[in-house]
Amino acid sequence: MPRGGRKGGHKGRMRTYTSPEEIDAQMKEEKERKKQEQEAEEAGAAPNDIAEEKLPGSGSEDSDDENSLRRRAGVEGLIEIENPNRVAQKSKKVTQIELDEPKQLSRREREEIEKQKAKERYMKMHLAGKTDQAKADLARLAIIKKQREEAAKKKEEEKKAKDAAAAAARGINSLSLK
Image (cartoon, rainbow, N blue to C red; front, top):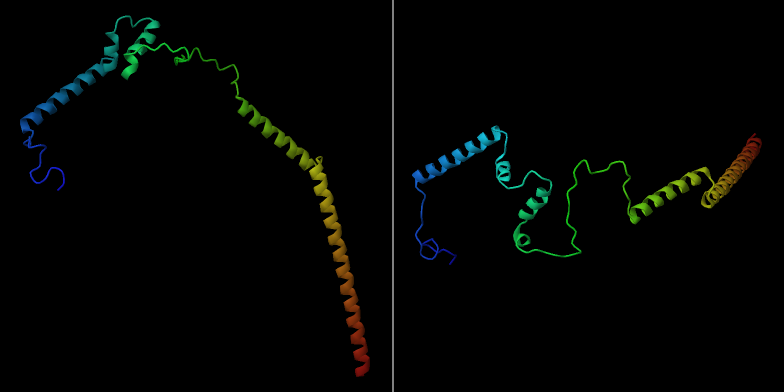
């Protein structure tokens, strides 16, 4: 039989239902909370800002580091770690970021860019006919062109010979019929 059985409920407890009065009270509390949040937003400070203003020493730059230490979640906030290999991630401000200096590329990225440039140079030289492969291709194409011209000439000569033979045969036939 599936869990719960026919009787329902967990381990013999009776079912409890929320009364309409309790539901109305919960809805009123929720509406009041939303109104307070809206009033706080209209006043110019979000509810989270009010909580941060209550913390002591929130005016200095060092307090950002202190707040981040307080905000650590889980076990990190409870245990102090002294790992020399651990690098703390520091957020940079917009004024600290330098856009003027070029981005340092990794070895793989540099090699990839060099490979692409070399390929482009090769293709330019290939199209200009300066590479060994291009020269070989052009020579092969010239040979094929010559062979096709010879084949066309041979075919034309054969056709002329056939026409001449056919004309001669017709000439003989026409003489013999007369």
